[in-house]
Image (cartoon, rainbow over all chains, first blue to last red; front, side):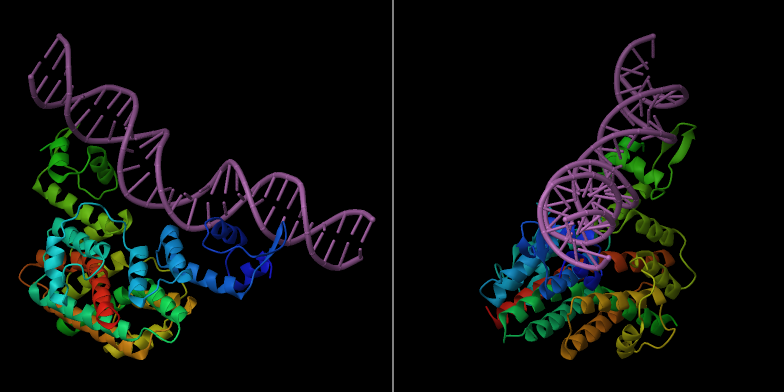
Length: 200
Length: 200
DNA sequence: TATTTTGGATAGCGGTACTATCCAAGTCAA
DNA sequence: TTGACTTGGATAGTACCGCTATCCAAAATA
């Protein structure tokens, strides 16, 4: 398959494919001559993932990291999750105060060193954002958040396929990133329905 | 208070404040002469909200819509939620297939016309993204998502303050936007903890 | 009066995700 | 074999976004 065919099958313009090649998101095709290469179904699938990630607001740099994680799966499933999270974690903005975040996640069973610091920093930054805007979350609502994310995470981790390492990688990496917009969108729907229930 | 003082109090550079004024994110100060204006605490608070929103990845255009919603509260609390959601909803990408989304949210008690179409389109787009990447969500996990967002939404709506319209607006608008990064970050922590439980 | 500072306008910057153009080497139908 | 077309590859340009820098005359301050 040559580049134009790949373009047609994946629905991605040729110049964009070239761009992804330059950015090392897409591996080179098999060279049939010094200036000719051919692509396979692997490339089509890869392009689909790339478009899904970038279309979900993941940056090119993050996408590259995610794809690297997909290609070089870490030894254990646990490390894998860390890699996936690190790949898509919002850029560490340096000095954040982790104390409040630690206090909060201790209610999830967190203890010092039991999860990636970058992920914890994400919680800290989110709390800071709320704080800077002068927004406080009531204890009832916060409890609902904690219970819910715990429920979600347990179901997700429970569902990690253990038969194939490749399937596990795919599940964890894509699930981390691509499910986010779904959860946010579902929350909005649920809010509107709950609002209709209460205010009609 | 003049602009340099406002800048110092809010921790926002003067040129940036001027930019927000140009973009109508920040209302003009009270004019004391044709080329002089003074700002108040209102402006400081407003700047805090602006920075919190923009810092959470909300675009300037969206931020303007959110602030407009804060300034001109719709009549009912329910309309208000719709306005807030519409303001921050990802840009409607046109033709999406709502059928799968409708089937899904019916499990939340959704019925035709019971929520904003833009919000439903958000669910549809998220599902499409997952689909394009070839990612499927098991029924158990999806059930966890639905139960959880329902639990979250009910707690949130339950907590809407009814004493003051202004407080309700603030709660709904900021809660919609600023809580999103918190939920995503908490999910990651919970995933790491659940993963440690299962694999660690 | 001399020195800032102000509001306001305009232009530029740095980053991101492409997109367009060009080129020589390769492919393919006639 | 010839001539139109396509390819991989490099380079440059585009559009948008959130600022940031510069300039100006009027106003405030020392």
